[in-house]
Image (cartoon, rainbow, N blue to C red; front, top):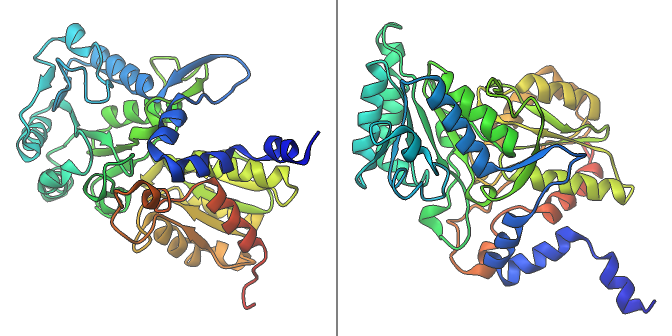
Length: 376
């Protein structure tokens, strides 16, 4: 075998994808959307279909549940998450709204106060900034301000974070924004089981819940367990999941970054560098610090990964929680954050590819963290 051929066959998948992302991010994301995570059998389902299944099951089970938002009905949703729901439940329960986030969000919050269970879809969470007063000042605070007399069982959902080629005003991660608000619950699904279980839990919850999905994950297929296919399946809000056990370092991530973290962990293990434990946060607020602390006590090192900005981010909160807990005494090296770049997301393809962490970046940071010691 020639040396050139040897190099070709030994190059890693993450390296190939990163190179493609830098030359043509749109094509890279299209290929990623077709990717399927292998399992040992069972049913596979896209994240999009998992969300659709959750909506259909909850709307069937409870007539108080209804969906509203831009293009959710006749167009089947901007990302086809609500496909078929208008035909099944009719225009009274699947409502196409005008392009006025503040208006239809306020209508949804008011209907929740009156006892209905609205699912308010934003075409992107960036557009929800038009309705942030309704979400934060009305939905999140009214239960407290009414002395516990007024509930607000509402679910806000839509794609969050970076997509592909949509520039600065459509690429923000709102996990830290809404995660800081008392009265809100905030979840961030990664795979299909997360998406179905967390959305069903959000709809059933008597509190306002923010569901932060990711556009680039909608078309990706994941294995679904037999339990996840059940109509009774829910994922508990506030509980993280250990996606991969390890002994040398803990990697904590949410949303799309979980996949990159798992790839980095597998790459590092294949190279014989370390055994990394990967935690899928699932829930931003409440934050499952117990699982993170327990893991850090075992591995003695921690890296956080997110697509949002570094200042005041989810990783920053995790760092603070670890510093203030008994896990701090178990750290052999400083906690390290891997985040999106501290800039508005570039529109230029070559710059966009460098603005967010990927497998190679995470692996490089883990290697560097393994070589660090506190005080050194």
